[in-house]
Image (cartoon, rainbow, N blue to C red; front, top):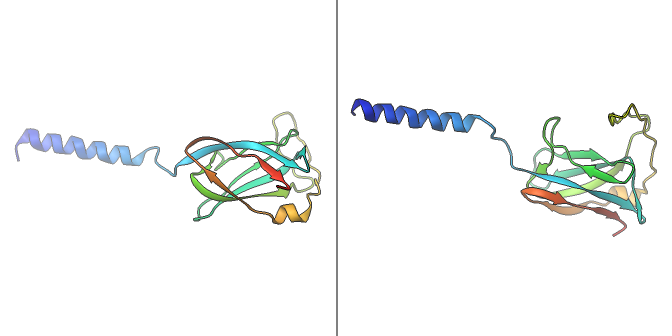
Length: 137
């Protein structure tokens, strides 16, 4: 192997190594939407998307208008691309949601148990997704 061939091979290997070490991670799709219960926006409701094939769930809490945006981690928005079981839970009374406008203490929204038990099959795609959750459906 000539010196220039060796140098070229070294550069190519280094580029492959560097490209494999940064910014990898799972493919996520941004997910937002609105939760409505009996035709009304559901405020302060926990939303969870659990991947059917396993993996980390994504979570959110709805705002006063029933709107949510999923978080995959503390630094990444969205959910894993693929099929999910989506569900809702009442917020825990007395939990500070830290909305940025001061501390807000949540109150139990008293979601009917049949809606808490209902899991909806949803599909998260790459890019931006709007997935509204309506109870009953």
